[in-house]
Length: 333
Length: 193
Image 1 (spheres, each protein chain N blue to C red):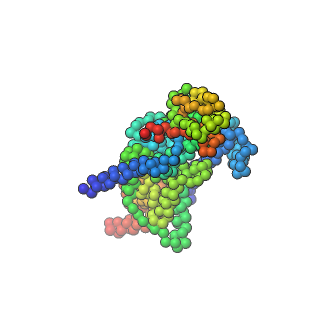
Image 2 (image 1 turned 135 degrees about the horizontal axis):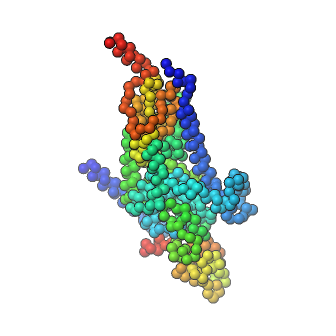
Image 3 (image 1 turned 45 degrees about the horizontal axis):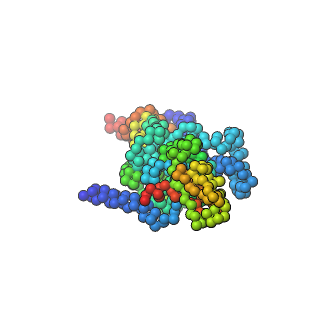
């Protein structure tokens, strides 16, 4: 027996890193509207006219940003926007779904905008659907929601665990683009949770109230909780569909090392996207989130550089099924 | 057959959705809003804007707000300005930050602004205007960022709007009459007629 367990691989910590990234991005989306408010207070040059809570915001943000900027009014413009489309120190980045739907809606190729989607597209083609697992602010909420669901199940609350066809989301992507085209309006923005979250956090903090998108998002949370585990991402998300298509031939893949696998099935249980790592069923929808790597007791899941998945390699060599097979073969032969 | 029916119903529902803003606008003619300075025509705006919200996030004046369903589903989450609540100061930061060109990036110079910005045109209601009623006021003229180009004053500070008015709304915001005697007629509602 190999002594893998005694020296767990460093890859296991990637899942923690992923949570750090997700949390940072979510906090950033909360921080940005406050930065905006602070900038407007600075621009008004009227500290003494601010309301008490506005003064608090001013003071906190000043303390927070003073080490980094000279002139908050312009210097804090370095980071603006959301994960849907944003400016990051002069670099403009947009969600590929934003680009595709905008082209569909306007029938026009505005290259300065289309090029903002280039980096996300290239990254997705190399690393797969990483946006969904590593960046998406909705994933942050949905995964916490999923943890809550797990606790509730453990406490005996019956929650739905329906399984639908994963291909529904491709239909929704298509329908969203067709609707955008027919209406001449970027409709996918209204049903895409990461875009909604960025917007709604801004509305709630800087404009005083949530908009209609918040209702939609809460409905998706309830759907995930009561009907289907991670249902929106797995079956409905148009952006996830586009990322999956782009990441179909991704170069970096999580693969199973059959010699180290003991068939414990923890990877299948933990997979947020309902994939089947145990039987080498990763496919285009794997987002390299590394949750399965973190949970694997024998470090049988590793990153490999290849453009296709391995075919099913049979039961893991450390499991009972494989051992019984060997015994049978020996006794038979 | 089924697929044809599906496509038919899809097209029908799309037509219904497209008609919704017109119906709603007809039902609610008092909802008067401006698009940010340098915006495309109303028809192209909903198709070009991706609802990223950056224009509002850089607006130092906090005049840019976002539509709910008031103007129909197709302009959901698009930016708008109600000048009486908070008018545009023509800082042109929203155009700089707009990734899609829905709001054009323009330099903050009078000539570029006069040529390219068309949010609307101010109109004076002479029965409400203090100056036109003989009580010298002139506040709108003094609030205007394009004095003597967009608006000039005559006898008793009576305002006359000129054709180079870009519709920023600072006059409407500053009008001391209640209700305001000077209003911006948004360009997207003028062009519909």
